Structure formats: C-alpha cells, structure tokens
Image 1: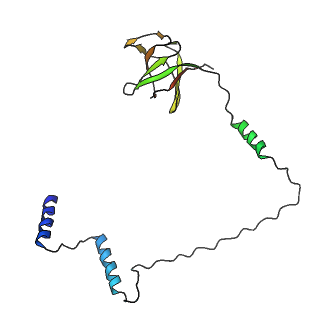
Image 2: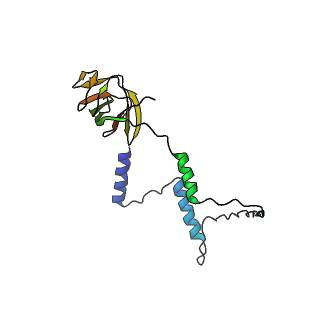
Image 3: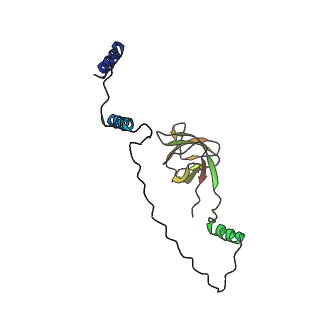
Length: 179
C-alpha cells in the first residue's frame, strides 16, 4: 500500500500535477501562522502569538542579627582540622593476606576461572578475589586440572575453579584470613 502511494507521488510529479496540501494539526498551525503574518500591516511585523509576561514576586530581605559582644572561641588552623578528619576516616588495619595467584582466563557461560597459582590450595579453603571491578570471597568447592577433579593443587599450576560471581583477567586471588 505504501509502495503504491510512493509510485503515485512520483507519477504526479512527472506529469506536473500539484501536490495535495498536507493536512493535520501540525500543518494547519503553520498555515494559520502564515495567514496572520500576511494580514499584518506592511510597515509593522506582528508575531502570531503574544508572549506572556510573568511578574516575579519581590524577594524578602532578611534582617541580619547583631553579633554579641561576648567571648569568642579561638580559631583552629586548617591543618588541625584536616588531621582530625583524616584520623576519623582511617580504616582499621587489615592483617596481611597471602596472595594465592592471578586469574588468567574466565569462562563466563560456565562460571569457571583459570588461576595461575603462587601458593597451595585445597578444597574447603576460603579465598578472596580482588580487582578493579570489585571483590568477593568464596569457599573452594570444585577444582580441576585438565578436566580432572583434584583435591589440592600446588604452586605453579594452572587450575580451573568454579566461582560464584564473574571475575576478570588479572584479578588477584588471596587466601582469606579467618577472624
């Protein structure tokens, strides 16, 4: 249907027939605007729509209170304030964690991470993944080397480890310290 309308318009252009005037709300406004401008006096241009002027309410002035002539507190230096705020925001010191390895690859469809180990790892250990995209801890449940299940792995090996959340390449793996 749209195709035939297109063909009809092309044939009408070739024959030199005038195009039908557009109808609709949007186009009728344009015609009205042109008609108003055409009726305006030649020496003066009028805009079709008058702009409304909105008066703003007057702002209330606040009275300033007179300062009391009592004793003033001594001003603290900026460095003292900074030291105090830094001391409050300082996190508690964490015990050093042993780095177990690095994520070398991640299979997102099966939630498996390939880890190059720098230490020993066994099933039941709690490990922590840490990287630019966040960190989380989990217990080692399933571990494989060359598609064979293993109970423990030593340093220097590449293992496949089932993870609970997505990890990224170069995320660090730490042994979670129990507290």
